Image (tube, rainbow, N blue to C red):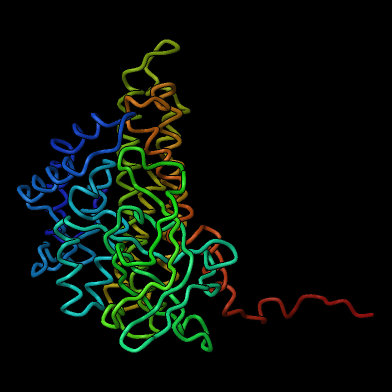
Length: 404
């Protein structure tokens, strides 16, 4: 299908597809079913990405990227998502991609020099530390319990977080904390840049979880006990944490959609190639109506995902919050790409659950998408609230009511 993407976006996306096909996928195959990819290997891929002129497409040129706008980036992110290692190779991998965007949006010049530039270069890693164990903040961020209190020219942070993606490897943590306990949490929280080697930061453990075998991505439980940081480590305005988080999450949810769309596309490419070669019941599997109809259904739904994401991106580019459009895109994309990869696994049978192909790793990776960056139920709640916000009682005023 053709989309009305800017020419620059199409051109860079084509280079990314070539780079992923020729350089990244051969490396990916070496790691399937084995140890996670090494930092040295990722550094080599990133150097190759620079040779292809596809490195850090979303980052402004003055910080080492290509300076692409959101509409231009969408096909690029999708092309990167075709390999488990693709996003990391061109530096559009979560959570660093969203954290770099946050630093770009609200960071001071000093913060950008200290953290944005090393993150872009791949010399540092980051984590976004917001989710807390029960009864702290999770799907309901208003339940946030971690605090930050000002003491002279320092902030003192105390709290308990978990599911901080890449928290164990992070050099810097973006920590969400209450700074005005008397205000509504949406108006009384702030974000802080906390170097992971700061006294009082304790990585309790890596939480065992589904997925991450090839990339080695961790999800950490972290305690903050009397963690002191200088006041200049406040990221953005005081008490503006939730507003900043929303600026981060809107685009990040869309880029997640596109990365996973690329993963789903490659899963289908593998399944179609396998079905065309595999003979059973007097012909190739690709001639069986059940498989052809299943592929047709998934291809149609993936087209809808790409269209929805581009619509939401257009609203963001126009300066709108696009909250409903983003929620619709995220919840629909998460379910479609999960179904697409599940279908590919089923078509490939034993090879689908084996590790000679990436489908099993895709399957493990994609399940988290219905939870991270807002669970399905949270986004459906947002959509439903809007759907019921403007009712017209006249549509049913003529109906008979009980009179007795």
